[in-house]
Amino acid sequence: MTNTPKISIKGLHKEFGPKVVLDSVDLDIMPGESMVIIGGSGSGKSVTLKCILGLLHPDRGSIKVDGEETVGLRGKNRKRLQRKFGMLFQGGALFDSLPVWENIAFGLIAEGKATRKEAMEIAIENLRSVGLSPDVAKLSPSELSGGMQKRVGLARAIANKPEIIFFDEPTTGLDPIMADVINELIVDRVKEMGVTALTITHDMSSVRKIADKVAMIYNGNIIWTGSRNDIDHSGNAYVEQFIHGKAEGPIQMDLLKA
Image (cartoon, rainbow, N blue to C red; front, side):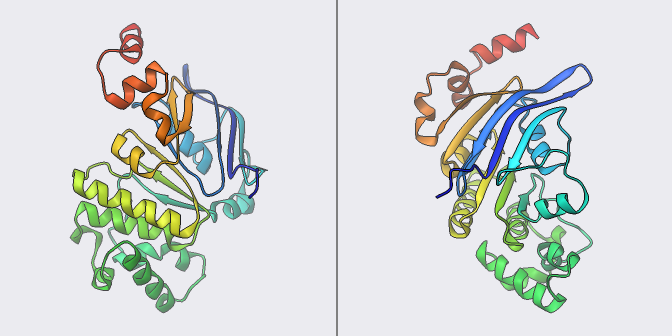
């Protein structure tokens, strides 16, 4: 097994005007690992993810994927990198104008990797892998429940056989039972494919289900990293307050000072 992290972030800094969102984020994610970043709203989770994806450009710092520096990559090199990525978006982000199967196979068709017939077969295969029947393939996204839309989003995320899958608040808007179903599907698909996973969430039930490692971001820095099993005895007051959802604690004190 290689000792080179699949994703290595060092000194990541991003600010918007006078507001520093990421101060100096350091984080390593090993191949095949499921890393979950937790933190409150505005803590920097989404900005970190967008910097890795190349949607935002950090002001300074390093983001390496398989040992290759990715900050500043453009054009063909950025596209080559993005082929390693799959993404399950928070709101599903399905195209309303396309049937389900074309949503799933969108990347395959766009890059000419499959004919439409082949793409439809791949889409149906991926629908089955997330527990949906083939007849869903021809429905439009508007005909699907929230849980079904999440499953279709997951099917799309894995259709290109990525090496890294990003999950952005995967259970937002779902009832507890459907959230657990989605968490189970994520665990099963990640393990089956042997991919590296990075999830951002504030849902502790997701954390306890899908994480191998957990990192907490606060005030633009990673303040604690450890295994899922260590989170309940982290010894970190900020982590303790966050995972138990307590109003009183250092986070609230900092909010009152702000």
